[in-house]
Length: 262
Image (tube, rainbow, N blue to C red; front, side, top):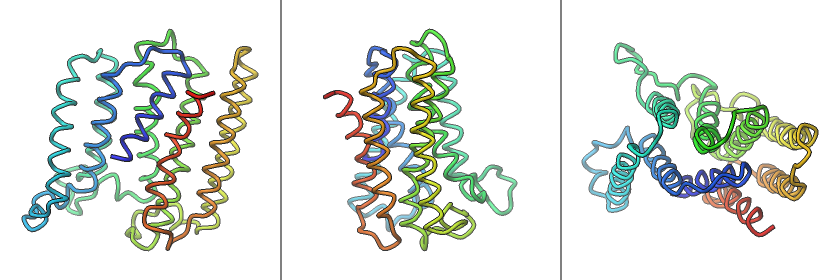
């Protein structure tokens, strides 16, 4: 549920940035669909395990997932054709991420098992939900500013995943080829810092392209980059269990609050 809240908060930021009226149906769909996707990816392999089904916690997870699926199905008819296309693309990536790409694949590989692809798929899916789904029908045109913002959100999600990959360095199977597995922890942190600097530079690119850029939002983005840099810097293999799950995934909430308050 924490992931769903983070994605929903980031989506609200998109509404605010492009001055679009909040679509609560869309926000509810994003929250619910993210919950379904997260649980589907995490628990699909053990979904039919009888012993695990008896656990109360897992029963609650299945119940919440079913409720979320029903909510998504009820909201889909309210979507435009363009929104449905984006939803279909995101859903396809999610299914192929968890399930074998082909039933004829003897190795039963899915997109998640393709070396190095995991973080790019997750960042792309999140960014599509956060940026393009809210604006596809409400914004006048998809211009360079939208694509710059999409890149910024992609960078943010990419870097936000790194503390999780560092934490799971010894738990992830080697075939995943996560960033820390490929280049080591220190180089992973350096990559994250460079990407956040690019995020920072993209704000100034927007200032050059737009005369009415909100300087407060630029300042807020700098604060967010600094906060995420600190969390990334302090990431390690044996970090506290809820370090990444709580602190890193709380950054979008903090980001939204700053935009609302300031």
